[in-house]
Amino acid sequence: MTSAERDRRRIKIPVAIVSLAAWAFLLVRAGGSALSGSCCLPSSLQDGFTVSSWRMLLEKNPPTQMALGWAIMVVAMMAPLMCSCIQHIRETSLTRRRLRAIGLFLLGYFVIWMAAAFVLLPIALTIRLFAPTSFLPVFVGAVLALIWQMSPVKQKCLNRKHAHPSLAPFGLRADWEAIRFGLVHGWWCFSSCWALMLLAELFPSGHLIAMALFTLWLLAEELDRPSEPHWRIRGIQKAYRVSVAQIQQWLGTNSRSVLARF
Image (tube, rainbow, N blue to C red; front, top):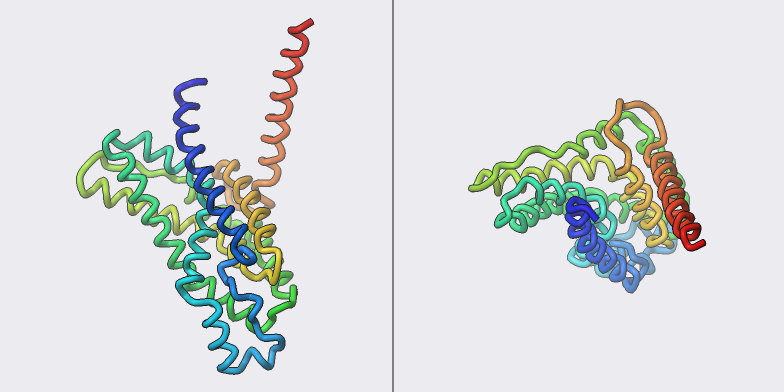
């Protein structure tokens, strides 16, 4: 194992542990959704327009509880996508400042995503208020999300998300540039992923399954290099080619090991 591979493992293993811990929390949490009180949604559209329904919904979905659920959801889904950024900070920062720079980057990153909660969660809560058990919003959201995922604007966001700026080595400038890196990267990450994150919250049931599938899709997108913006399905073909190459490499290595025994 080369030193570069060891460095990558030092990042990927802790990130994987944090992500798995977040998934475990969501697994034991009711439904795995930031909108935990979905079981207390009104049973009809008419009931959804009453003040008592709104009051009951907010009582069953306190803002602090929704914010916590959203934060854990972001950690579970987005932590694996930040490995390259953390690796970049680790490689470009002084040894004594690495943890501080990574912490400031994460602070900026999660500020963006927590601000996004104030936009996406009220939209999802309102839709689920007026269609508590229907999968029609899921269907409409899936169509819109698919259009967004294939759009040239989505590719522009991905291209900007792959940009890793140089960071100052020390001083207040280094701290600010680490925070700014987190803010900028978080913004382009949100701009890229907002449709899938909103869609995950529209499911009346099966949130964890939807989140897991969307996470795999986002991970597949990370394998794609920046490219010219145009209409296409992103990530899936690259993920398929990488998976096939890994399987072929594994089979080839093990085949040689088996043949070496004879």
